[in-house]
Length: 284
Length: 284
Image (tube, rainbow over all chains, first blue to last red; front, side, top):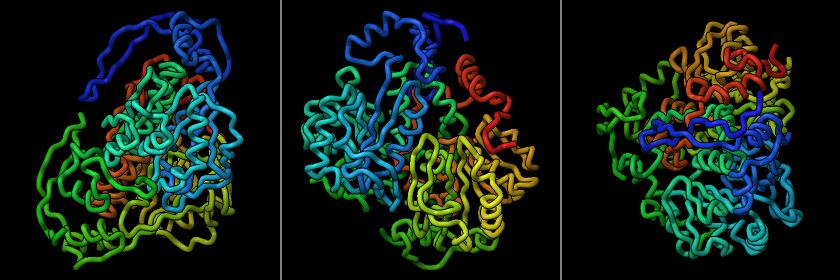
């Protein structure tokens, strides 16, 4: 593939019906293509746009990127399995997993996720991701909170999926920041001084804070993070490789679409859910 | 919630644009609602529709369901993390994980999935799921193949996600059967006597064989399996809980949508991909 610096490419912004609008924009092609194809190969110089991005505290697509996924007992596998699958495929990107004590963690339903590092052994990371869980008692504990706060304060990007945002918010780092959360818990964010936003993807402070909604929102979240940090083409490449061309068999993925009797089932199991105020172990 | 036996409920079939058509059907409500809410609680008698389903070799929604997910070194986490997240939430359903030697398996990218049972210790299962991977050398080996063939032959439902269908096909159980696969590998199915179908979800023999396309297709696959085996309402409830309301930021999830330069990147890394004939370790 030849040098494509600053070649115009199509930009597709999805409208609400899921169709594409196309517009042209300039794209810092060389560095991005090098990163995508080479997985660490650096080609040419960063474009002016990339230099500008770097000056705002963002990484250029050819700088190494270190991502840390925080694991804990009671976490939800799919909250981070989507991001994991995407982040591992990005060029020049290292993905690590850590928990308070290292080793195996026992997720929701007894699923065991292994080989995590110890949080205290991680000096710093470019991007910290806190996934959610069905029981937040463990990551809401003081030692977990202290480690997450330490790593989040020094990270360039502080991120979460699902009710992982409650864990981040409890550390204080989301004070006054807009954040997403699973729809059943989103308004709990206000109890920690964060600003609840009932969207599937939310960012604040020009991407220093990025968050996804519930569980499967982690996939959409991670593709947006991928675009921001590794470039549009790397994100599209990853979407193609994981065949993310969703075709849900029902319209039941959000309270605005679910049938009343289905929503009633959730409210029965998670009182307060339809108000975004469901209770969950570990959350006061 | 009160008895809702045979109460008509709305059925939504999604058209290709993602909008819903609504039609009314009779629904075997008591058993299904009991299963959904009770997670094992059996209410009342199966409806005539359920009895008919059972007579076709299908499980009624209130019968216990045992699901076995086959793990192996080199597998892809998200191929089964979506189904896992959905299946664990279904009523009266047990989900187990097994590998040839039991214990930890090391998935793609060094991700460690723990606590699997030994395949030889599993006498039988109602539904076997074989996920895909980036290296199929391990599950294509003779011992894995023998265990998978044994369990598939006696299972009511033989299923796969991504190129896990190649692993199943290599055992011979998909001879003459229609099957899905990741788009990059789908035509390889013909080399094992299966019938490649380039869809996101495929079933044959009235659901004895069900398969999903690449990686993230496992989520759509699992929701369809959930509907078939545990009833529509349980499937919709699960979709709502995992907030599966996808909003991909790009149109790049399938070769028909991806930009030519993105597709070229895939063909470069996986020669033959655009013809559905990509090579992968372990596949002849």
